[in-house]
Structures are given as C-alpha cells and as structure tokens.
Image 1 (cartoon, rainbow, N blue to C red):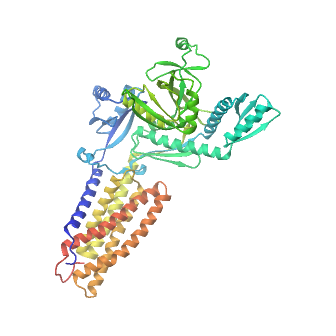
Image 2 (image 1 turned 120 degrees about the horizontal axis):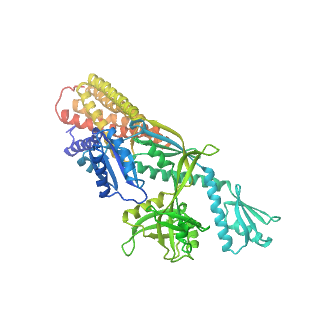
Image 3 (image 1 turned 90 degrees about the horizontal axis):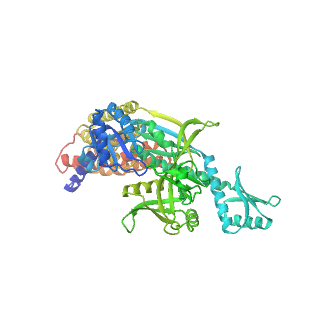
Length: 615
C-alpha cells in the first residue's frame, strides 16, 4: 500500500525527536552563581574542607543553596550574586594560599537529568559574558634560556670527550668557547660541528675561541615550541577557573588569545594566567650545615628552599634537569603500595638525566616548583617585572641511574601523586608571558545578546510559520511541526557535542537554518501540487512528490554542507560558531523535513482513498 510507514520507522522518528527534546531541556533551567574551591599544588579538598567552609559561611551568616564535593573540588551554590561575592572574599581569606577560590556559574540541571548526561549548551563569550586576554610570550627570554642550556650542554660534552677548555659562557647572542691550545681548538671544533648541527660554529685560532650561534631554523623552532607549549599549559591552567569551554589559540608569532566565557572573577583569571611556572630537579646538599644556612650562612654553591609546609632543605644550585624535557607523567603505586609518579623524558632529557644521576645513586634529589608571578612594577622597556617564587614539592632518593623513564616516590597520598603528575606533565612554561590587552563582556551585555538572538529566531520562526500556514494549509502545519522539531534537535545536538559552543554568529546560523528547513518542504509540496494537477491520484502524488524532490533537496543541502565544513576548517572564532550551527541545522533539517514530515503525512493521509488534499 502506498504511503504507509512501517511501525518501526514511525517509532524511530518519535524516539529521535524525544531524545533531542530530553537533551535540549537542560537549557530551560538556567544557572546558579557559585564559588568553586580547589587545592593548589597537591593540596586535597576533603570532607573536612567542606565542613570548614560550611562553618565559615554560617558564622558570617552568608546564605547558600548547597555545598557539594565534586571531582576533587568544592562547589558552593548561592541564590544571588551578592552572597556569591561575599562568600568568595571571605573564603579566600579564611582558607589561605593553599586553596584557589574562584567565581563561577554552574547549571541548575536536575540530578536525574545530569545523571543521563544532560547539560546545557556552552555559551560563547558574546552570549554569557566573560573576559578576553591577548598575551605576549617573551621570546627574548626563550632564546636566552636556550643559550644558557647550550652553555651547560657544551661544558658537559667537552668534559666527556676530555677536551680541555678555559671557559664556556654567553656572549651576547652567541656562546663563546675558549680552549687551552690549538689542538683542543681543532678537536672541539670538529666534535661540536658533528654533534650540534643546529648551531653555526666559527673558530678563531688567534684567540683560541669558538663562537656558536643558533641557526635560523633552530631559532624559529625554539620560538614555535615555546609558543605551542605555552598554549597547552594555559589550557590546563584555565581549568582552575572552572571555565567550561575556554578558547585558547595562537595569534601571530608571539601572541596567544584567551577567551574565558562566564568568568566573573577577572582578577583571579589574570593572576593564574600571568604566573609562569617550571620544574627543576636538584640534588640535596648533604654536606652543608642546615642550621648554619638557617642563620644566614648559606654555602655559595647551595640554596635554602622550603616546602609548602615550611620545612627547610639545603639544595645544590646546579640544575640537573628542567621540566621542559618532560613529555609525560602519570601517578600510580610501587610494589609496596606507596604512591609514585612515573615520568617520561624526551631523548635529550633522558641522556642528560642519565649523566647527572649516575654518580648520585642513594642520594636525595628534590623536585622544585618555580613560579614567576607578575608584579605591578615595570622595567625600562615597559614590560611587566616578574617575581620569582621557589618551593620544594618532593624529595626522593635516587635508587638507580635514571634515564628516559623513571619514578618519584614519597609524594604522599594518591591525590597528591596525581596532582604532582599533572604539574610535571603540564607545569613548565618556557618563558614569562604578560597580558597586553584585556576586554571584558559584562553578563548584562551577554544577556542582551541572547535576548536579541532569541527574538530573531522566534521572529523568523513566526513569519515562516504564518507563510506555511497560509500557503499550504494543513500541510503547512506539518511543515511547522517539523520546523519546531528541527529547532529542538539543533539545541539537543549542540548540548550533546563536547566542545560545541553557541555564539552570536551561531545564532545567526540557526536563523538561516529556520529558512532553509522549510525550503525542502516547499519543494516537496509544490511537486505534490504538480502531480495532482497532472491528474495523478492523491496517494501517487504524495509518493512521487517526496521521491522526485529528494535528489534536488539532497544536492542542495550537500553543497551547503560542504561550504559550512570549509568555513569550519579554515575559519576561526565567530566563523567557526556560524559553521557549527549551520552544519548541524542542515543535517537535522533534512531529517525533519523529509523523514519527519513524511511520517506525519503517511499517518494522517497515507493509504486512504482520498479525492483531494488540504495543500
């Protein structure tokens, strides 16, 4: 029989639309102002922290909606932003430097819906409000650091080859290596040129000096690596702010653009982003007297440092390895069930660490966390001056000669080991960075953009609705039902896709989709009218109308989808947002306008002896 869907196909349409409606529904519940509390550098947020926060809030008579421990972080919800701000200020002071207290907005989705994976759409900066930063990487510091490492490498390699030298030191943009005699000069020149192919070496026999300069390719590679690593680290850092979908991308040769939608606490964001952190491994000075060091008599080759609990240790100044060479780190347990951190180095780091530890087996080694925090002071060039802070995060005994893969024990609880692994894996910024531009979009402006975008979508929907009702009568109602289902599916899919963010241009894409969604039905309905005028029966007209128009609809939508995918591939920011909603809208509109409307038409008019259609 013509125009009768099997039951399974009708049920499939109903189930797909129902699932879309289910996952679109979290967007109806709004968001709560909240304060997010997380531990710094291995500090664990526990039930005791929760009890302390509750006690502090009750003591200060600050009302809260709920407090819960979620994913190792504490989330306190409030009824309004006034109590949220009061709580942030009070808790920041009460909890001290071991905890990060940040403002946030969290979805008010019911627990049963959240347990099914239902979350609202992520909103872009232009809709939710937030802050945007343009940050500049200090490329001079990058090159200086690379040259300093080259000095250390040249010294160790020349010693290993038993080539005597007087000095190896930085000299402006190059490294000057002064040898003892012409024979050593010749040996050093031959060895260095063979070993370090990314350096240019020029020897001067009159002064017994070799000048080493990085090649242009090496300089470019060093700068590129610094920029890419900083981008990766910043992405991890903004997680401390609780930002759902931050945008972190490069701009030009030395700039990074960071957009933090929904962030209210710009001061906290600047503090975290401005900090430059790195990791160093150093030997503990067992020969020096710790008591003398505490009294101000620190050996020239050592340094007095403290851990986060204030315990002092005397460390050698010589750096065995920096965190730049760490390519992976993860936490686990040793054979005795104690927490440990497994570390993997790159090839140069593995070779360097092997040489540094072969004569130190059985001796304690410290992992030092170094952070550069921006101050209010400026240097002569107008750049921000950074303050250096050093802290011991782990001291462990070297059990064997360490190479590319090794482990650190004695890191405390499993949570501390996990946090240390994260820190080692993603804590080393190559060079200081500073904010050179800041833009803030207020929540009120974001709310206004949402209202204007929603009004545009509803206006477009209403006009299309009236036109279809007037021109196609009952079939117009079918098209309008499909259009409504299409909007629901777009919102549901956007809510389900991780990383999909709705922006103002994205809302423009939805408005465009509203018009395009009924375009397919216009083609189908006009074809049905033609078939009826040519004398075909009602059922034949419906059948041929859908079948004949399908290829035209498919071709038109595929070409538009190709254009949308190209926009997504080559575009950035707003263009990507437009391309995402347009692509999703094309796919969902094809489903609703062809499969969805046909299911309704078949259910109402299919398989019946009819003389005319309300079209």
